[in-house]
Amino acid sequence: MDYSREETFNKLKEIVIAADESLSGRESEITESSRILQDLGFSSVELLYMAVIIEETFKIAMDDVNVWELSTVGDAVDMIMNEMKKQH
Image (cartoon, rainbow, N blue to C red; front, side):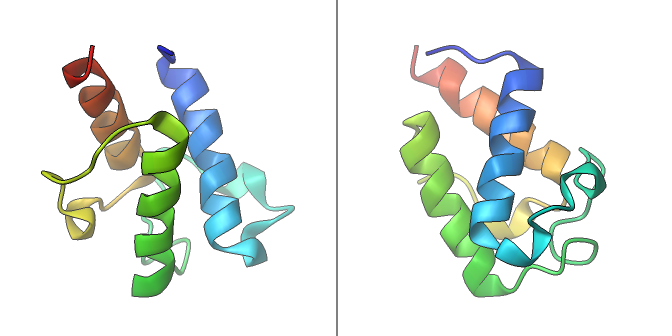
């Protein structure tokens, strides 16, 4: 399935909340410019869990992606969209 940028971002927000339930109810605080580690307070375990959920949700392989390079939510959206394009 092809997602628009907005659909990808909205789905990613759900994934972010699934990876860190303390963000539940604070969806409006999650923007494309939100820094995953600094602003959202993700631990390394939560970041890796988010990567696993991204792979399962978007049916992409993140083998070539260094999750530690995903600084912001927008970076993650870009990566997801690029990986989805590669697989089509």
